[in-house]
Image 1: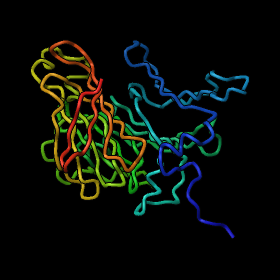
Image 2: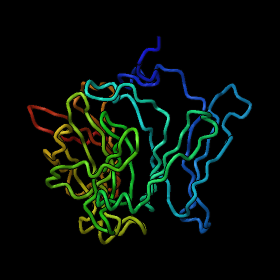
Image 3: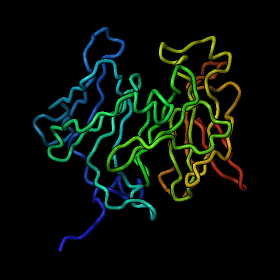
Image 4: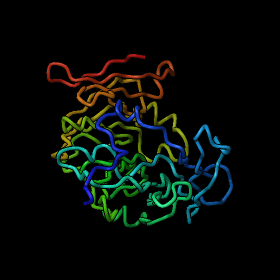
Length: 297
């Protein structure tokens, strides 16, 4: 009798995942943006098996059907968040969710039949994304316990607010905005969570007006680039608090929680300090019931 068991590639913590056998192929976004070449971006399939004669080489490529997507971050349809008590534990990790940063289009790619020869399964148009969410310029993908989450850096035009949209785990239908109450949050970039505590953390860059053509130095000095991280009630989808890192440290980007999922701590980077041009890494943590940050590097 067949048993309903979780996907064996899902692990209860990053520490456990690091003990797993290594992958033998990697998928790499390859883009033509800024090259002057009018060709579709593609996903390169790279052999990462050290025992293979084609180790380190591109062994296949999946071309997108459109020009100008600017593929960027992408992720799986399912991951270890499916092991949460209120999640969908029998969902299968097989699809890559690949958004276009510039086009706001989403590609769904199936890797199950032959991981070395992935197939395009579905395309979600930018018109559908924008009409259902009000968002554009899609960036980070995370597989949540209840849906697929994608961050968006802009609103319907070159302004904000940016935020998070969600897709159905099975049909990939665009379900709408994630936020019920966004509070003070306007700028967006990355997001992660302390999932055992029902807490989401988001960072902030700027609006499309100030990044699509490169950094705008006047806007940077005018404070148009973000300097905060935001904390949310993940279950209620409501903004709880924002914490300013400093007045001068700007472009708050990649979020990385502790590998121990019970710890309410994590790291985030800032790109530039407007006084001395330095970059920095910050620790966020909860102490005495209050979210705090400290520059550590």
